[in-house]
Length: 353
Image (cartoon, rainbow, N blue to C red):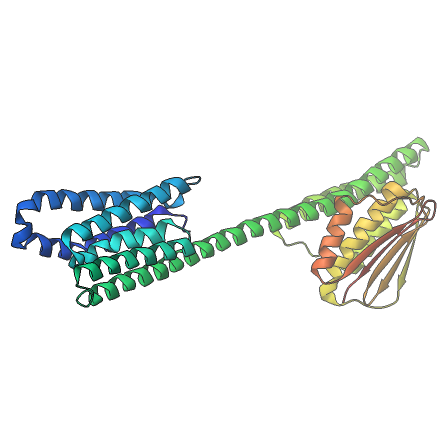
């Protein structure tokens, strides 16, 4: 059933306008001349009732009203045909249209066919069934045209809904992308800055001003990097290479006093580097933050990466970072696993096709 009432109103109004020649022809006949005022009033009431009923098409919880409107308009149309004679069958077209518009598809078609059957019986009783064949062909054409127009309107509404849904999904995906990128940028950099700030404080307490100054300069550089990466993330310009991420991982591990081993067993495809770099970044950040590890090992292969640490391990809690890794790897058709046992460290494995 269509959502907008205006299409239904236009359909009903169109078929009501098509009955005007029939009304004019009837009113011009001498036998109806004494009743012309009454017939005009009936025509106006019939038209207003039909068009007003079309507005019920998209009202929720108005099924009873729609059925009542169909019964009212259908009965009025049949009464007019009976009073004016079977030759006035075209007047029934708006009622036929309304049955198809207001009722669900199958019940509407069945009701319309019942209405046509009643008209056929009236024509047969009046002995004008043969003469009324063109009128029945016209009414059947009205029914078919109404069904086709309704189908076209509904398909158009579905296309509009699909377009809106696609736009909403695009906005949602963009929000998720920005959220993941900001998480990646701020997570690792904030951890590194915190570690370097703590290291600077320790160096100052030992009066090692030269090394402390170097750490402060690194903090300043990282802060500038955060600002640039944040802008790039928002603009979707940020691209990370494996080499750059491995260098950043070394800096983070060094600041935390953790040994980092890198094993290059293969060269991934350039198109896979950004997502694999993200896995390395998130895994190293988690190991530095939560694992209490003394060793982090990164193995780079042509088909993926593996990041292992010797931390305390334990149950894996799937937070924003792990979900982000899985989403991006799965989007590339790959798999990601996180294995961690109590006091056995954690191993993150990402595989791409």
